[in-house]
Image 1 (spheres, rainbow, N blue to C red):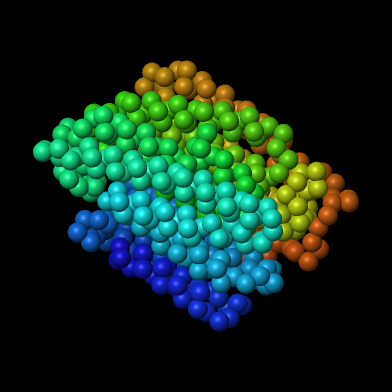
Image 2 (image 1 turned 45 degrees about the vertical axis):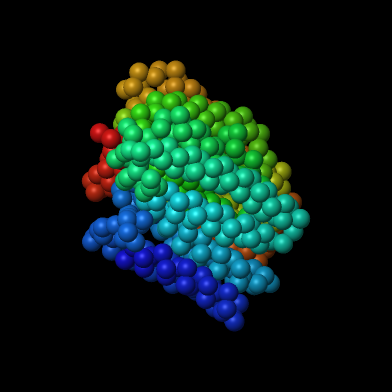
Length: 476
């Protein structure tokens, strides 16, 4: 089943490039997403051991991220049926095929137990995603696609160098001479600590670029601002989470080699910097899709802070992976509908969205409340767990800064969101033919209900999964 959930979207993606009919081709997204979700559900019920000589295995950490992406991709695939129907003037061959190959590559990242395989899969996500950002075929989307490709490729190149350094750390007489995660962790005390430290720096910068941690985030505001809403959802709630998982893998090895404190301090610093930068650029933001890009910078910072704190905060981090992924799906899909209805992303032109698009406008407001950690939505609880972790580890300054940045972001983001959903519709530009429909408003609505449900009740198997994922990082 592990091989199945990787091969199925890849084969369907390749088939999409040969599919002759532009109108029926998007249905391949639903088929691929549904089969992928069934495969992941099967792995929940009947877990499999390592396959491909141990190179692929779905452990607890990978299960959190892959499950989140599978749910989000299914919602996005359904949304795409309505979205691409409105964009029938565009050839969707590259878009549909690229999305499915991206799903296959992301799943490979989630299951990779070999750091070389993980690097290759991360690179494939970059190559598959860049052409999709150019879907609107204008100068701004072309610039965004090139910036994403160049900055991400630079990050991946640094990650490759870090992977080489990690291989060198085990090249001694007692080293594992392997990039299998299990071998590296088992041989942790025998690894060369200077090489491990150097490897962590390069890998953190490389995969941190894919996460969009400050100051490595320069691609995000352009890519998220110019990409279609459903691609923004998969970037913010999918690919960045897999980059986070890649950092987790590196942290596991670094901690086993005795350099965990060094690694956690670096993560803590980058995480707080990301939250601070998001707070600054969120204030007065006039492009609501770029606002969501800085929200993604913030939440990747939250995940980095949680890893840096260690202990119970890491459990909160994996809970937050799920919450942030679903919440970002709500925000980006609703934002895509609003953008389509008004033909603009600027707050000086978009207003009274809750009246023009009653479902999408309301979801945009509810998604804002969720993503900023307002109870009873589930992100409140994961952020609360991370805050408790800061206090429990004796980091009152970190806890104070964490709360301060969250408050500033809430105020800054709230001003932009309220400007979009409230006000008078008189004189606002628009596309009178675009209205909320089942395919465009239904998927974000279901995601929003899931975010609310997880805030009211967290099933014990999910909590057990988050704890098991955290134990892989903390070793306790």
